[in-house]
Length: 181
Image 1: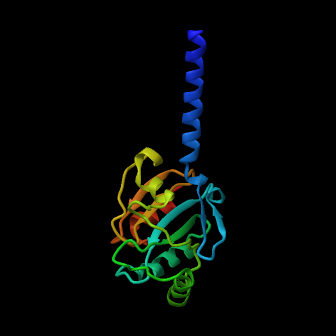
Image 2: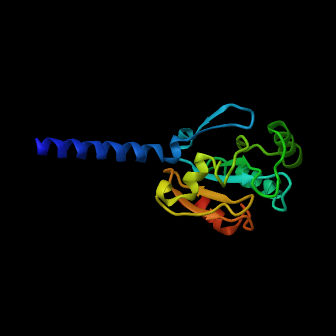
Image 3: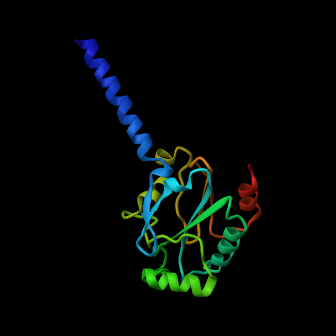
């Protein structure tokens, strides 16, 4: 009887760990686009991904131009996903329509833009919990320090690096990562 209980406990722990691992994978996330549609991260398998929190009224806002240029140049190898966030000095106060208009008219943004979320604090979006917690991503802890912080995800859905706001999306480090096979 004792052996059966131990066996059952072992099986339960294996299933619990397996379900935890599955629920904390990059490709398991589903988010809403800026227009309210569904965006399933499983469609990104086999591609490098740059996740960036954006804002329309920030000193780093001109990075939208760099993001778009990198996206256009490496579109077959890289997907850039923008997440507007209002976590830093109210620098993204607009509605989804305001954000879309701003990005399109000022920077010609064509890379996927998602709904406005929180990237830090008690209401942090689950994706950003995954990006910033080694317990969830299995690689590293980090903190979102400001707008236009970039997270690099490889073709297998593994977090590779964090690129802070001051570094442009077109930096040598980022381009070398995109170009590496």
